[in-house]
Amino acid sequence: MLGFESPKELMSVRTNIAREHYVDQQSREAFKKSVEQDGFVLDFEFEAYRKDRSKIWLSENVRAVRDPEGTVVYYEGTTQDITGRKGAEEALRESEERYRDLVENSLDLICTHDLNGLILSANHAAMELMGYDSESYAGGKNFRQILAPKCASSLMIT
Image (cartoon, rainbow, N blue to C red; front, side, top):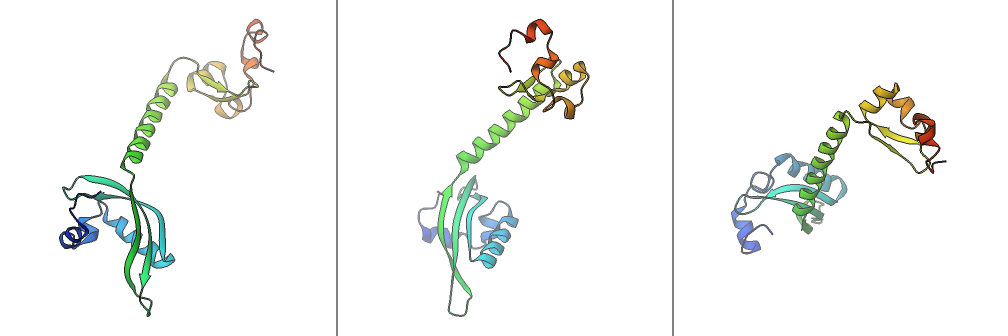
């Protein structure tokens, strides 16, 4: 996963984990603090460096192994590569931002409503043209209330 030939190579090459493994050194401190407080971490997500210095997202489930005096001797657990999921999450976030920007800046009236016709959301153009503010429009009006009577009567909205 990290590009090393063996665990031995990894341990011999990486002598400063915070600087050489974690992209954000603060993540290492957060990891250590959580393990120290709780004795374990679940689904701890962070960005790490591979051997070639490319970046990879990891999720770890780790517990602290302690000696009889209670001192942490080492960590034990599993690590999963979540780079694909993080990329998909970022692509979705960017897509949602583009969609939101398109809807909000459109000069067309754009609304969403439930199956009963209750308006759930509306863009700025719709609210401005209809003369409503967002509080009284979204969640407060039925789609039939803003349509011309002959159009509203042809809809199957109750």
